[in-house]
Length: 394
Image (tube, rainbow, N blue to C red; front, top):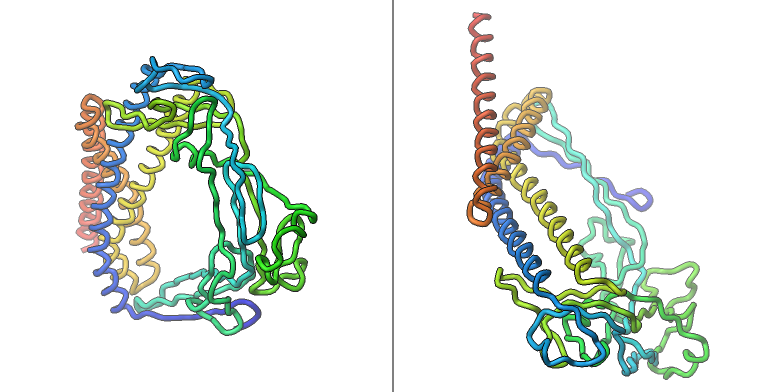
């Protein structure tokens, strides 16, 4: 070990690599199956949410938050007002009290953390050599980092527990004009601000509650020198969610709210900061739905492509007896996996659309099948070219 890093070199024989790659075939098949399920589910979710939002956008009515209108009972309503509370939230351990919707105590401990980087290179004869570097640095973390799992534990020991934990306290009743927000709506109020104690308030807090802690920069610190923290030092800061103007869309039930269950199967419960129209809120949700759909499709594609690569990886390992051949075969398998993964992703989406979007699904399925047919034709053509080249040399 040198400095704050540790390097380990390990080797693997060609036979062991081949056995691992054969075992990987099963995992690759499972990965392709999981990708199929994920992609199919994602399309159903996307269509369900899109239809639910369209239904909600056509059914929503804007009402005033100043009074409870019985005529809006059970309807999907949109309103704007100040989300506020009359409660004072307290952190008794540190003697902090503040009128707010939420009070969060954030506790962090200075600890060692490990970062791992590996580089594998093939060797003549099919074996491989992996160089792994473990780097160690010190950082603040709100979670306990288990140093017992470090590769090099000596000199990088962390404490076994967090002396103080992060906690969030939430007001039991948050109102919006004449209405009371539901617990789910309050959870969506997440615009936090730093809250700094003054020395007078800190001096008035119970001394026994902060044994070992000293007031520092609006919070508390446990350790010798905040400017030069040591492993095990703890700092505690506070954040609050203050009353603010918000806009909501939800189903009105008496003087409170619940999610609106659309006929399409989705539920609608929207909260956003500021004075925002119902149209804008639904448009934002539609954009979020589209973004999530494409992000999930991308994840499904990579899972599909990697699964295909694992299925054919034994051919790369066999060719890796001569590293240059292994590299070429690996590149070819990677290209095949990428194109095949894309085609299978499109096929999966097309099949799901046959259930959820029949007209679009048929067109997409034709396109995907054509892509797969072209890929198979290209593979056969290259095989014929290789056979012809061998025949010409004999």
